[in-house]
Length: 150
Image (cartoon, rainbow, N blue to C red; front, side, top):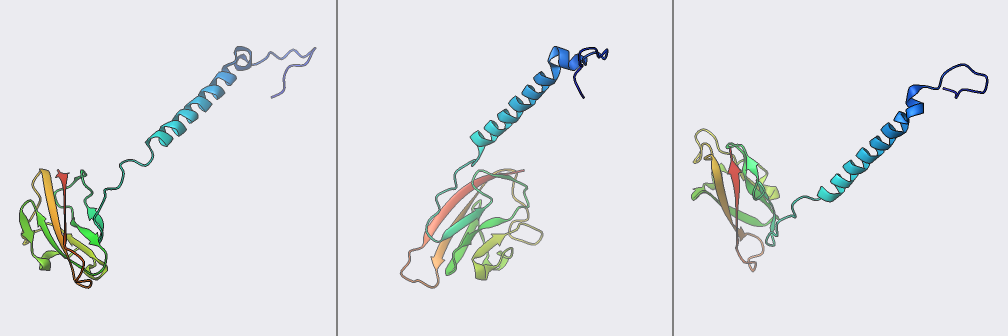
């Protein structure tokens, strides 16, 4: 849109006369800057827990909120055997069926016919004991964590 020239009878648009366009543009820039600042301040979230040597990750992560049928377990480096205890119940090795054990993935999924059919609502805790199967000079280790189920 062109501005009015001398001798031109067209009126200047109201938005340009009152500075509305400039205010809207500046408002959008301030809002965008606020979003960028908020993302920058909150990035990273919780730091990763310190796991013992041989343990790569646990599921669910410590402090998580998960459904009562969620898998529980760990990913270990190859060469470790896992014993998993959930809320005081030792899970039989034959029921560690979710994951690829040859790749170090040891997970238990509650369900019908299993030692735990569903996790109780509220705080649940798991403990794993890892025993080396390859490097017999490595020491066993234990790791415990808790999470909330709903």
